[in-house]
Image (cartoon, rainbow, N blue to C red):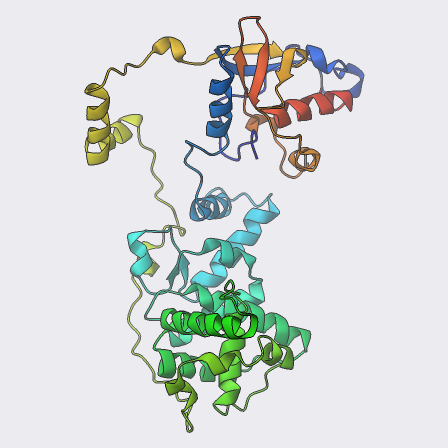
Length: 398
């Protein structure tokens, strides 16, 4: 969302009149309502367009999927706040994973090498509690010595959904047989991913004449088709076997020619998992540092030193007069250049005022340019401004 931030912002809504929060005293003229505007004085619309891109992604470090998940978990675990259903849901999913020695970590984190860790947080969030329970338990039972590969989530998400639809149990024997196949035919899930992706490319090229895009449903389908081809006896729903018909025939001939696969899983000795001590979602860092700490980090950064050197060797100078100004401006004085701003997303506005999540303290100030005619032209924040005006019209702003 372009103007509502789910992190603490430095700017809050300031009302121009102190009024009691009663409908009798509600403001009715939205044009007169003053709100904080941060602006640069310029007639340069090219600057405005570039600024819009910067405010909406370009030039901004986005919150990672893991960082978002971490904050949701901390709200519940550190702050003991269970008022948001989404936070509670995510924390419960993480607890299920942790119970089975599985741990979400940041992408490119050094922790991603440890057993049970996974970085595909987006896929993790799509699984139900029951699907997570089976997937994480399966990984911890049979592949506890390596990181959790994302194909595990895709496989069991599809299998659990389909077995449930047929009101059939995904049996422990089938789970063990599938683990034996992964171990005995591919070594691990990353190698299975490579093999099934290659099989899918051959399948799609033969059937449709083009390589086609990978479909994540292929993980479960190909493995179960291969399971039946090798003589597996456990029940498998036909809809899983019929999807991508004969996909399993495109695996390596060395696999297809096996006639007496025994489905025997070889136990791997279990060792203590360091993530039980390194998991930052348990208690967080519990520390607050000064800005000096970050300045010191920059001073020790090779990339930062190099970037500073480039500036020092150029003619560039920091122009303090270019810093934005902040002023309380009436909403009626805000103009919208439709060649800069996107189309108003009314469903997005409706979502913003969800009473379960809407908090005026999280509104960010409007971003504008102030031209030589004294007009304030919005660069970013039209949804915030529209929501405020709409609430005043509805008699909801006290």
